[in-house]
Image (cartoon, rainbow, N blue to C red):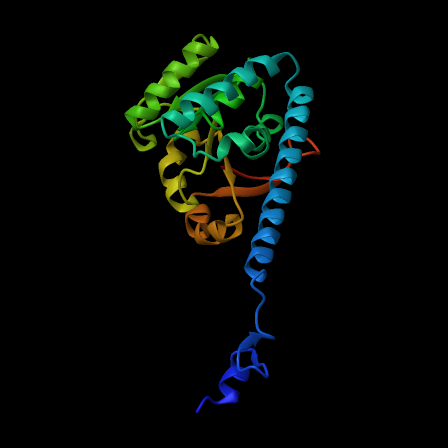
Length: 256
């Protein structure tokens, strides 16, 4: 015999004619409602990102002034060849100004005039090419060990007309024997390893300017011994290139 409780447990009721009709439980429309809600959230997030990107690009125009056209040319290279060559992920063109260009631009106000700059592990030219384009007074060397990235950098420098200001070298920081006033880097290595590679390049009278993320305090703690042992001073600076963009975390390391 059929058990009416089985029907009740499954959100159904038995009619007088013996047929069962659904009275409760999840609505057939519920999954569609959840999906629609998720799509709305995703669409809103994209709209927010697009707004931030537009604001960042407007801020860049004001910040770079006469160099904005050249910077835009570099952006075109990044979102074109940079993505094709696998140097940037497919999502990055949507946030190239806000996440990349303006993050690197935070370094501009802390680099002195007319100095020699080495960008270690330059990759797609972030921050080295941003610095070179925005600051024609600087001599910039882009150091990159991987052949594909090295070739990309050489092509970008040639296309942007920076041959007289920017030198591209293939190699590793630990193999370089030159001295520079400023060494820059972004997303290259954790600080203990980075200091081991770069100290011979900027000491005794230069400095390291490293763009770091939220782990900067942890990396400093892990580097306390090497900083103390070599008589270094380390300063964390929070800099906005323009009011429209996120704060960039810059670690400055110098002889103490």
